[in-house]
Length: 280
Image 1 (cartoon, helix red, strand yellow):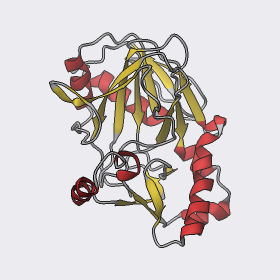
Image 2 (spheres, helix red, strand yellow; image 1 turned 90 degrees about the vertical axis):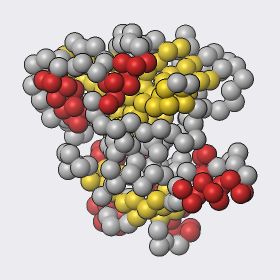
Image 3 (cartoon, rainbow, N blue to C red; image 1 turned 135 degrees about the vertical axis):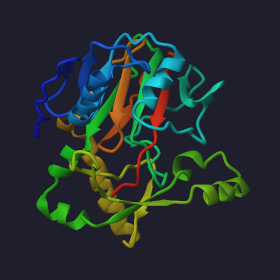
């Protein structure tokens, strides 16, 4: 397995949770007043480990938002439930009445022309057991494909659509209107990270409809093969939540999967999402 760079950190503590993806950070408070040197090291840890975890972050919603803004502009999700008074905060709340979760490997909002840089998710209510989130290193997933497959997919583009997930409850008229505002996006199957230069698989089963210019059967078979790369344990890190635990993942380099194994227990998490750039 490819191991993450061995950066020396001076102002924060960084404990890896796997050889190539995931690290637990400590030594700072998650708010808008993180000192410049610490902020630089947090940024570097995110690039090195692709997803970083922070425990015991008992902060106000306003501090959660302020911390996110240190990394860029925050987006407002047009389809999900946003917190009253704080439109930047997306709330994901499951109870005994919930019949489905986010238990599918995906990257966030890849249906946007400029998908998110990353997401900062904070746990508020956590079941006694279960409800873990898994993260997959999509750079490792790409690098461990055979050379023939890598050659086949380099230069291909996939079509990403919001309505594969969020279109089911919309009328035909409403769906057509929203599609005018958020038309299908065309992104490379293999994305180059704008900061690290690493190449990663950038297709996910939630939002991708097909590979552009490829026959339907061939597209479906190839995509299913690529999707399976996320299920390989050696490419993964797994987070067991506690209240006030935070996960901050680089949406340009990972996919994630929220295990929906805790029904009928309650689980509530809150997310701010950082605006990204157009994949290349």
